[in-house]
Amino acid sequence: MKKVIEKYTHTSLMIRIIIGLVIGTVLGFLLPGGGLLPVFGKLFVGALKSIAPVLVFVLVTSALVQGTTGLDSRFGKVIFLYLLSTFLAGIVAVFAGFLFPLTVKLPGAVKDIAAPSGVREVLQNLLLSMVSNPVEALETGNYISILFWSVLFGVVLRNTAQDSTKKVLLDVSAAVSEIVGWVIQLAPFGVMGLIYETISNSGMAIFIDYGKLLLLLVGTMLAVGLVLNPLLVFLMLRTNPYPLVFRCIKESGFMAFFMRSSAANIPVNMRLCEKLGLDPDIYLVTIPLGATINMDGAAVVITILTLVTAHSTGITVDIPSAIILSFLSTLAACGASGVAGGSLLLVPMACSLYGIPQDVAMAMVGVGYIINVIQDSFETALNSSGDVLFTATAEYNHWKKIGKSLPVFLGGTTKTEI
Image (cartoon, rainbow, N blue to C red):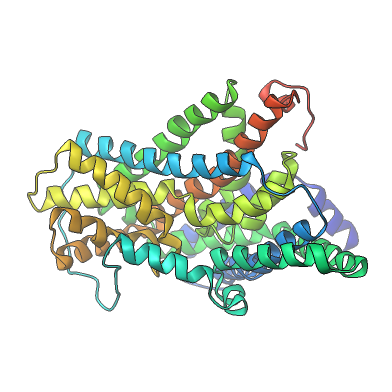
């Protein structure tokens, strides 16, 4: 058994995940309907969701307590890139919506869910969540609150804690990181269960019903991920951005696609940042923060579904109001993770910009739920991989300014883990 485990762990994780993906897909078509396979996916995502809040709290607190350098201009650059890319993603979605003005048949409105009434409510909820009970925040995965309290604890303990206390925090941090490593080793089984459940439940029907809308959403998100974001990286680093882009997609976006949870992908992103040689003082804060405010995919979904709703109801949208929609989508997307239902439930708020009735907007939310499996997978992959991409971009931009060479895969001489 020991030899089997060693053979398993020493095989490339990506190869193991691809094998799990193939097995899950085949079984999903041949033997749909249940069994134990979906449980593997639920266990994997559940384990990562459970350990991620503890990981963020412990690592951020420990990093601050150890007397490390703390945040600097790199942090501001990451936040700037998060917000800029989200706004520009909304702009790209506007152009996509005008180039391909789709109309869809709207089903009945989704019942028994409450959409926010405006950006003010979204941002108010976001700010109030910051000061929520820290124990409750750990339980519910409220990362804004977790970051807020972990920074406070870290700053205070940095000046008051004894050396023995700091050592305990360091040991706890190492232990939690080790547990995360164990969970990630089980990713092939988790991916197998997740893809099996998706194929078994949806099959190919999801690509047929509302296929054009799904294609427009996915195509726009691919344009953001493969054109817009690389352009931002190039402007910051002045080097070929695609080695970094593809590495983030391969090691972060790939996992996020199947887990459909930016929160669950936080441990994966932190390990990738470590591989890339990034400063933990920065990525320990920017990665969980990115899971809340770096929402390119959400901005695309909110913008396009709003425009499609307008087209479907005969409302004419002009360019200036569409730009306002992009700005509104940026603000709304930053609060998407704090609203039950994510980006879809922010569509009615954006639709209110054009005077679209609530029941019509909620009908579009119903369409969103029909295609949610694929739409949300691409959305999460774009959002989560962007967290690492922009954190790394700010870090490598700092390297260039201090005269440090970029990593080998970006044309420099600094070695990073492959």
